[in-house]
Length: 389
Image (cartoon, rainbow, N blue to C red; front, top):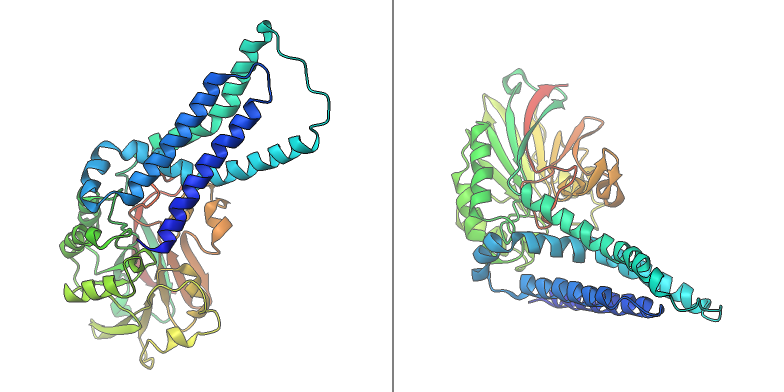
């Protein structure tokens, strides 16, 4: 296990332990203090830390058991540790620091027995709100774990030759084969893709979640996908976790065309559809538009250039292409409206179709999950129809 994972695990243990201690300190400032809430705080944070350890340190052979019997508690743990705990920990520190600054202010007298029940009720509301949110997200994630929509999009292409009018592409992304996406879910994805009977299929990264033991189920699903002109892939950030180039090599060895600084020319109805692919990159590309332009041969009349790149921000240097297909954002994962949620908080482009000049960008919400709860950002396969702009 890499030092980054060890750092993440250490941070989760520190945050859970520290958050529990801070809450106990706040509880004990009142006399008498509600001990049952203190016990609940300790049990909850210990459980969340323990589930986090199980998720990160259990061997791959445990995944089937965990996915079948522990999907819900694991979903709750992810909602707590990944989304809520950091905010709660920092907020509680601010509360503690504020109380320490005013500690010389006279303390209220001990509570009378008549006031304890109401105080305990208010404490229960305050201390139970965040766990209830985590439980609710876990329930939602569990109930919607197999949901998958088809999102049709019309893609305008400047000077599209008549022979390619109506050409269809099934855009699949972010399989995340692993703990939360097993063979059953992967079969749903491959079957739904085949039902579209698209001319071409693209898979824009994050085939696995974090371990090469997760590759075999994904490989079977990808091999089952059919289209008239094949399936083409690019690398995602999760594909790099086992090591640089390992997933790329595994795809090539299994006759899956993973494009890494490469392009292929597909002769279709007498025209050229050119597909280029870039490996995962998050930064350092902003001033290098040649990364994209050098992928493609000299443009001929009627050429259609398509770029596969996992991170949508590569759209900024892809002006020499007609269409950019990306994923990575999961549609924002938690969205409370079209422009309210995690998507616009972290990304300039997070879901759907964007246009700049003669170049279109499609950002897929993805089909799988590393975080097992989607709100307002449903899992999807995009069905793209090329049309003359």
